[in-house]
Length: 637
Ligand SMILES: Nc1ncnc2c1ncn2[C@@H]1O[C@H](COP(=O)(O)OP(=O)(O)O)[C@@H](O)[C@H]1O
Ligand SMILES: [Mg+2]
Image (cartoon, rainbow, N blue to C red; front, top):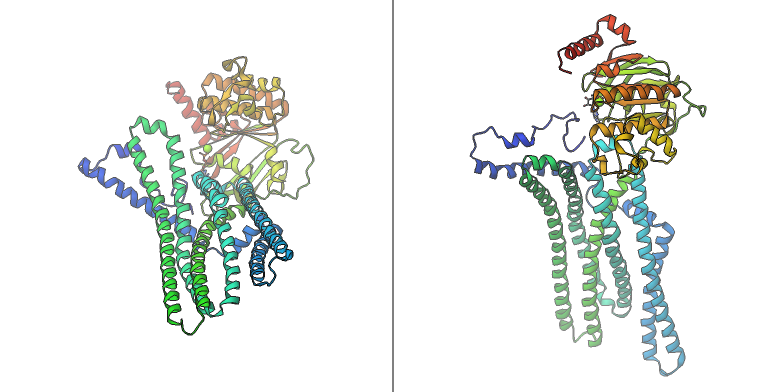
């Protein structure tokens, strides 16, 4: 279920909190009191949302990070490379130990001037330096490889996954994973992991040395390691959960900020800058709270470990004093020195390893995106390269829903038409007209029934072939910042003349002047009006000359005169290709020259057939036409 209840979910809609509603409160509460109360209420709401989101996420990933995540990280870096880097860490430590050992041998030798001592020592030291440099370079290279491969895999899967994913996950949440989480994997994780491996090797090497020279300290080390491991596992459970909460609560920041930017005009118009700022601050505080507690837990671990180190130091110093008559003093001194240095080293290693585990949650979150299911593209149908020949459509008992957890929105839509005709889809808002287009392009799940194009069931047509047959002018077209030409012909497939021809057909060439192809379009096409954007989108569709042209309220924001001209142009262009045109329109006038009409209501077909038949039948279509004619006569339209 979607964590943020929206108008399209099945959950009870939250009470509207429109700007005007909150501006004109109906309660008799004094103003000052209201001002104080609102942030608290909103804070609680937000808190419960974050908690709900967190709990939802917890079902998937909980507690400490599993070994599978570490394995996946190693695989993303390259299994061979990871093994080689680990080997280099071990080898550099081994050569360091050997050089220390050789130093001892050299010091104990009777003839210290013998050249072999210095030669072997120099060789061992040089090898240690080479191994240490190589291991660090390869380690960071492997880390970079792991983060870029997880980024690429996550991006590829997100772009290729079903559309339902984007309705379930707000853009802010997706952006968060590709910014905040990726930064953790790129930057912080590598540093902490390097420290852990480095300190781990140094610690292990020193322990081997200590066990060989002062065996009595072995039990002390065992006890120390056991206690540190316990403390670590205790703190890590909270730290990883808090890191997840930190990551999850960062998403609303992106979401709200992007929404505020989009709604800036509204915010300014209603003077709600302060309220918007307050809300953003509240969301930031929520995120800050998670991060703060994570930091506190980290400090708690650090403090407890420090206390332990101090205790070990005190015990070993006093213990050494207590046994001074029983054991040789040099041995006691050596043992105390090793205990003190190793406890400090282990303390830092344990803290760093807890950080690694926290940062691994980010890798875990990106891995979840890298495992998203892709849209199924394969189809068994063998199709001629010229498919579809005529573009005839047959929709039979079509049922569809947007997501598994949402209700069915089309409940048995049925109609059929031969290729090359113009089909008008009409019905009340929310009756399912746009959803028919979604089903036609297999952008949403067809739960029952079928759609066939030229007699071929679309579920058997490979997805890329199916979508290549359809041109779609959506209700709210998308534009990218760039030139007009890049937007109308994104794959640079057509000549300038053809692009200009399409722009002329939609009546846009004249208004943009001679240099119209190089006209700069702003982000989201914001330097065009809604109607102009629709006309440009139509030009894009007409240019492709595909067999099926779907227009969804394409003329809702276009004046009557332009509408009529563009309709004629569409006719001229589509008749040449023999395209089937599916038009969704509110204006009866736009549908007037349709060869076939389908009337939908609440996701079902109420009536369908040629317009003359429907007019004679006196059903919903004829009522719509009469109502429109009356309004025209009365001067309403
Ligand atoms: N992306 C979506 N996710 C979930 N439900 C949706 C989505 N788009 C539309 N719906 C639901 O599907 C129903 C039909 O919507 P739609 O086909 O857009 O209606 P129309 O185009 O006829 O106005 C509505 O009840 C709407 O709430
Ligand atoms: Mg619609």
